[in-house]
Image (cartoon, rainbow, N blue to C red):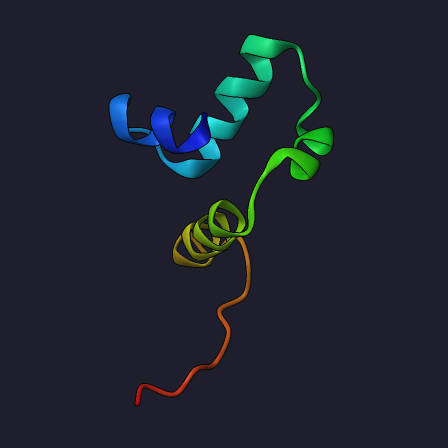
Length: 61
């Protein structure tokens, strides 16, 4: 559902999750149990790119 919203509506993962929560009357805090690991990883990457989460030091190999 999140992936579909991201692709079809050209939303960010953050926007798609908030939109789905509002549409289905779900608290944003309760949505994590419905997200798979790939969505969580994409959400974390997006948050790091937006400086919402601190960037993790990685080595490019």
